Amino acid sequence: MSREPADGLRASIAANASPADAALLAAVPVVLVAVFALPEATREAYVLDYREPTAVAAYASHFVHFGAAHLAGNVAAYALAVVPAYCYCAAADRRSAFLAVFGTVIAIFPYALSGLNAVFVRPSVGYGFSGLAMAFLGFLPVALAAYTRERLLPTVTLDHAPLLFFAGAGIVAVIAALAARTARLPLAAVGIAAVGVAVYGWSLWRSVDAASLRTAAGRAGDAEFAGAGVVLVLAAPFVAFPPDAAGSGYVLNVYTHLLGFCLGFVVPYVALRVTDGAT
Image 1 (spheres, rainbow, N blue to C red):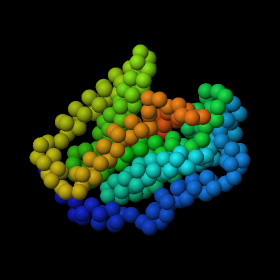
Image 2 (cartoon, rainbow, N blue to C red; image 1 turned 30 degrees about the vertical axis):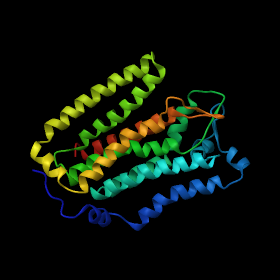
Image 3 (cartoon, rainbow, N blue to C red; image 1 turned 45 degrees about the vertical axis):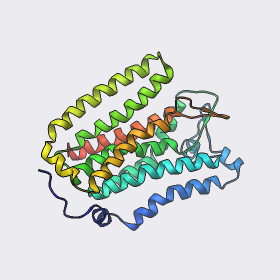
Image 4 (cartoon, rainbow, N blue to C red; image 1 turned 180 degrees about the vertical axis):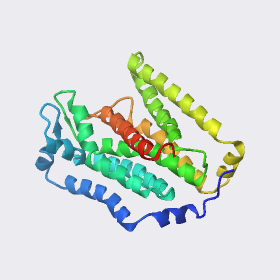
């Protein structure tokens, strides 16, 4: 049977959260808006030119936007991913893990995403926060696994987190395959994702009994909050990976979105798997 958490969901989050954390999370959109307020010529100096990348632009370009709609969309994507991730970690008493991930995404991921983009030299530039926002979305399956173990199903472990990751990646692959129609790479990705979902889905099915599921489903608030995170991860690809990525004067960098999503999952998963084991 599933154990009963001592505190309600709100009380559990509040007990492990800190007002300083709220300021930390809010600092990102504040910085994005502050950068957007700079003169356009100043912002242009910090976009990443894939033909001549610089260390400064590799980092700063992720905080640069030129349109209010682009900025608002990225701020919204960030908030929709980072706030639930923080709440899941707080409710699971894994605040320190969240802070480590947050610091890694903000301090290191800009260089990783820029470097992986600059490998393909092309006459274009890159900017915007979307890749980092997708990294926080990629972290959600890890945060959800910790939350589910603590609040709903004690038999769920970190090793079940890849199920949701493969499901989200599979949707991305299906979208790409439908857009490309005959491309082999997206079709192969669909197959890999399907295998991942099957393997980890079977593992989850074997670890959870019917009585535990009934008990978890009966915990009003806890189960719905977990379900909302699952829906978010599965729905986000339809927005972040549109079949037609070209707009007026720009091309949506879905490659960066995919890199952010994958790195946001893989790096925390591997780090926690090494430090915590399958817990």
